[in-house]
Amino acid sequence: MRIAFIGLGNMGGGMAVNLVKAGHSVAAFDVVEAALERARENGCTPFTSVREAVQGADAVVSMLPNGAIVQSVYFADVLGHAPTAALLLDCSTIDVAAAKDVASAALAQGYAMVDAPVSGGIAAANAGTLTFMVGGSEAGFAAAQPVLAAMGKTVIHAGDSGAGQAAKICNNMLLGASMVATAEAFKLAERLGLDLQTFYDISSKASGQCWSMTAYCPVPGVGPVSPADNGYQGGFATALMLKDLKLAMAAAQDVGAPVPMGHRAEELYRAFAEAGNGGLDFSSIIATL
Image 1 (cartoon, helix red, strand yellow):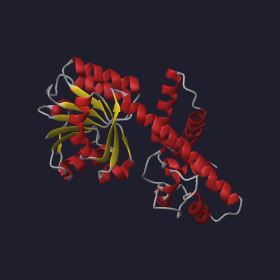
Image 2 (tube, rainbow, N blue to C red; image 1 turned 30 degrees about the vertical axis):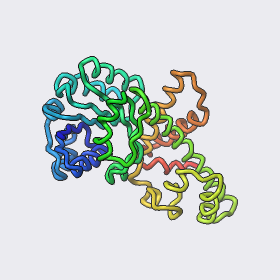
Image 3 (tube, rainbow, N blue to C red; image 1 turned 180 degrees about the vertical axis):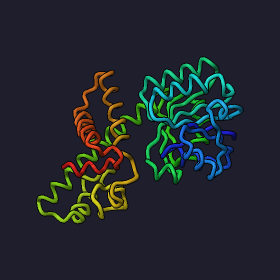
Image 4 (tube, rainbow, N blue to C red; image 1 turned 60 degrees about the vertical axis):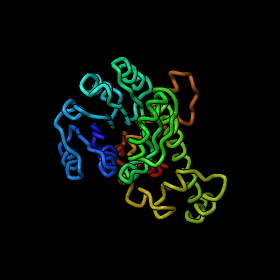
């Protein structure tokens, strides 16, 4: 397939390379020249505009920072410029309303489109082991599955347009809150005089275990290797966690859902990011406790 890939940042860069490894021809675009050069070095063909990249594409994959940019790119440079037979896959994490808006406009012009946000972080993007949560029609999901499978290990149909985004923000609200609770538990254990490795060995096999502990421990030297072992560099940035928590809070307000734990996590991550820690992995929130 000829696949246009729009957005080659920390996540998109690795995803595009995995499409090349799967045998696809990837037409790449990003506003950052260095990102385009990295894509070229890894087998992608760089283009200087979205419109050029999507010409003749069988599929268009986007990985962009927010809903406003997704809407701008699709309305101005994808719809009406990519072939109407091209499948459109937006893997960005954006608000549900924006995802539905773009999908509706695409459908009106004869395109099939899915929202397919991801879970797994930079390491999974590079390794091709992402989880995709897909919103769209059954036919759109079936068409998208082989493209997404080249970039991930799990591809799940969440429902109609926007459902992928809904699943993503609910998942990351849970992740943000559970990381805060995990960090609190380790800090309390430390003050109570417990050896932290011993606490991990107990809790990771007991009812308190969760992904934030067993796969992504915020304590250096405890559990599997995580960003905590690298000075909280890499992984999933605090600024991105805050973005997802803000999306979750907005969605909760729209539907009148009480989310007190999510709300508190958003407050804590907002204060942490505003203190200059937005570039650190989100598990570094343990430093505030």
